[in-house]
Amino acid sequence: MNGLKAAGAAFVDWVQIAAGGDALFACDGSIYRHRRWREAVGARLLTDADRLIDLTSASFELIRPPREALRW
Image (cartoon, rainbow, N blue to C red):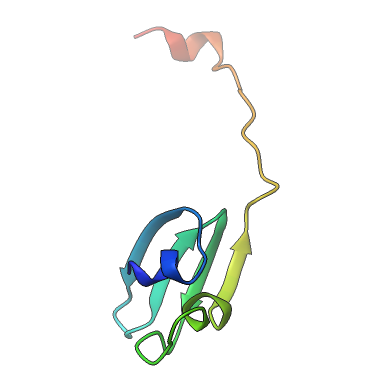
C-alpha cells in the first residue's frame, strides 16, 4: 500500500490483508485496521482506519539473562 505514504504516513513497517479482507498495517508507531480500505481515497486511507494500539510512547528495557541461561 504505497497509498499510506501518500496519505501522510512517515514510516510504514508492514501491511497485511487479513482473511476477512481488512487491511492491517503498522505505521508511525501504531497498528491499524481499515475495514473498507479499497474504497478509501487519499488521506482517508489513514484517517478512516481504526487505531488498534499506539506504541509511540513504548520503549525497550535491556534485561540481562540469568547466569544459568548463559551456559549451554
